[in-house]
Image (tube, rainbow, N blue to C red; front, side, top):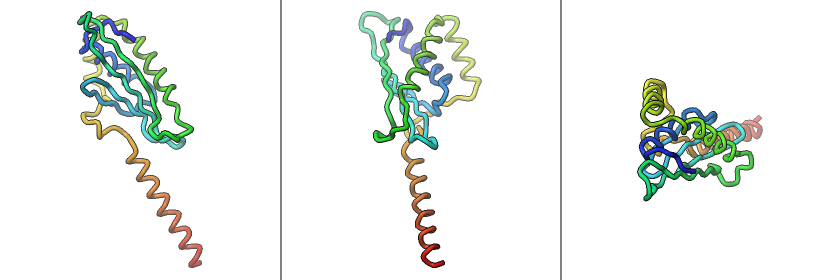
Length: 152
């Protein structure tokens, strides 16, 4: 996909699209990509949607992007990363029509005033730490149950 915007404006479109994408809990803007994550849910360990930005050597006003989606845990059969990728693409399509002078400036201003899902470091993205914590709690509960049934 190619956005008819400078890289800075394309980043604004992508971040606004992440803000509008249902299910994306947090996102992080890096040097060459913007990464969004859904976080852990009852039936899924989470999904990651990655937007890679590359410079178009032919034009300063065009920014090629590539969008990929993956499961947070490879064996997670209930994860649906493509669903979040489709949602993000739909939001990008809706937002890409704004020109840099009018719409994007207003959009960026509105997003700056509103609460945001953007985090400042990649380590703040939801990930496997919540899964590990949950598994530890479940293991302790299971062991407690076993011990109680052996004693009682």
